[in-house]
Amino acid sequence: MELLVLITVILVIVAIAKVMRSNELSTQLTEDEEYVSLSEIKTQGFLYALFGFILFATLIMQMVGWGKYILPVSASEHGDAIDDLFYVTMYLILFVFFVTHLFLFGFIFKYYKKKGQKALWYPHNNKIEMLWTVIPAIVLIALVFYGLFTWDKVMYPKEDKNSINVELVGKQFDWTVRYSGKDNVLGEANFSAITSSNTLGVLHKVSLDSALSSTLASIKLLDKKVKELDSLVNKAGWIGKCEELDDAETQLSAWKANERRLKKLIKQNANFKASEDDIVLVNDTLWLPKGRTVNFTFRSKDVIHSAYFPHFRAQMNCVPGMKTVFTFKPRYTAEEMKVEAAKEGKTFRMYELICNKICGASHYKMRLPIVVLEQKEFDAKMASKKTFANEIGLK
Image (cartoon, rainbow, N blue to C red; front, side, top):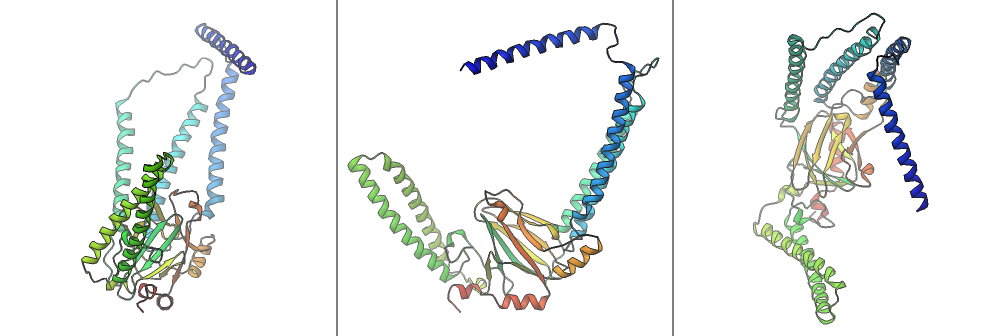
């Protein structure tokens, strides 16, 4: 306590001293005396010029030295358009930065205070105001339209009948991939059908029956638990059990709602044949065919994730409760990309899918290797994987 009082007294004394010093300086400024010499002002002008030179030099050195760490040529066809947009924007920003800062440091150096020199009072000029308002506006509007055109070109490419459909589902902290199989149609999925053996909730008569059976078993256990807790609360008045009872009742209500959804899906008696040849891979590898358009569908099972393919210049959020889409066509295998990167003086290790949203404590681990294969190799790889029908015991 005594220490806190001492610190408070010291701070008060320092504050009073600062106020008195500020008052002294303000008084001095009102007097016609030169407290900053012309030589000091000249020194400041030279220091500003030196600082500007060092700033430009170090920036250029960083651009040259770290340029090799920039991503190599795009591994997807649409990526060239993304790169063009990026470089046009970046070169424009750098041009404006260098020009404005050159004037900033140059004017400070050229027009520092000199004996017998008087500053020109120049408060306003309509032409200059119009110039530096209209030109940036036109440039920004052009950039916006250029960006919209590029986005439209990337997001809505021409329909490709030879494309394949792939679904990516993110959850803390891994990726699940689902391929559309031989029929090239992704089977329907619903969160109500998710079980330990059907992590994506892919719909099929067998998987729905399994999900309903699991749901009914959970309802039975929870119903028993609720009755036991309710009995304890009523007999003994155990306040400590009330919160546990509320949780159990909430869970029971959720499972009963899931039972109703599953019975509706079963009652529809829909033909879920499309899901039988789907291939589901959990924390495996994302295999992609070279030269073939891939239509991606993205989902999330918990929080917002972001599927980021840096080498393919693609990124799309995975949002709980909705589907998002993206399309691109891989054009280089890993070995070919190593050659292309070497031409630019850069190195390439591997393709990778990463989560670009901070989705939790282990966000950094949410990665999936990507391998681009020739079409024959891709077909062989898919043929070696189990289909959903195999997983549920149909074949």
